[in-house]
Length: 537
Ligand code: DQQ
Image (cartoon, rainbow, N blue to C red):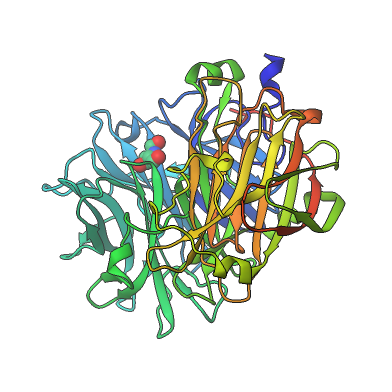
């Protein structure tokens, strides 16, 4: 089993043992960042779920704490499921979470810290009035879960959202409460989209071009609202940007063609059940997300653990486009960087492959910029074939006029294993050029029982911008951020040869018609201790 030990992350959060899924109730409280998570403490597979708990000063180094909430009541006997924290005006915390009752009905429960003066919030109390909210008659008892953080309305009530579905229509239900104990369902839903199925882990928050972050509940003339739903059907986190009317309780997408479930995603790889919180410590909104394993359950059982959290990301409205979010690793991560290696304007002619001799690269942070001759690009008469997409065009090995070009990570010397992370420029629907950002897992491992799909999507590139990507490599996870985080792709890859000291980097240009120049910064990344300590129970 030492063969598998390399897969453990060095700087991504994991409970170290057994199974984890959704992030829960993230909050900054009395100098500590708290992360709770869906935890199956007995096996590295999903099962009877409790709330795991860890604390950090910087969201990089973690200290594992005892399980915060167990399945010890009739109203959560079958699972302490996903929920959120709300900070009250007097700085008290309340948590709302979904309990799966002894009859497997989904109900909402209230909990709070047993000792608010303990900054580590080790002990939690469940309210005697639980469950505080049960599914309305017209909602299926098994489709009513994952309450959001609540916010104070002008009417002096708290408002929160719960995800559900009605037939095939995904829906965000709106509730008002004065005391978190009794709730009024609002007549109209916040939003609903036909054909999208169950909405899990709904998130709803304000963003603005003028502010780097806003606390939940902020409204105002320049404030937009992001609505996110985790789509149970295709296990992906979709968002849309729109306008929220606090009077009607309705949210309307800016562009109805890219409504929730049909347009933008936080990440085009493996990224699910995410949740944001407003970090009042540094005035920013932080996005947490569950990154599952994409190997076999058998392998997870051998490893003894399953799942990671993505590196926490700052999430904000893209001030330049106004039509997408930007996501970027928190700056605290930079503290783990060392041993910078730089390359300037490495020339990549069509068909070239250039090894980068920087030592072992199973644990690195990479920033790359690509420049290509725009005149050449624009003068090409590209055929009007099938419109490009990452998944449908054979991956990094299939050559086009203007791509793919990029960086192969977790590559062994003779490239029997490698994971290309790349751009591909293709003619779009309107005759102009579209840029795609992709990660190709098809040759990532010689193992057979792992996911080998090709992930990715388009990325907006504005006039005069160079193409850029940041790639975080951490043994069995690759997180890619294109154009400052306009498009993100996360994948889990399981090389068997391209590991530890044998993991190398290669620049490549598989375009047939354009020369590309690449400039890179590559840092070794440190280990964060405690990742492999299992939670104390
Ligand atoms: N995971 C939780 C649910 C949620 C789902 C159960 C999303 O509350 O809907 O572990 O991954």
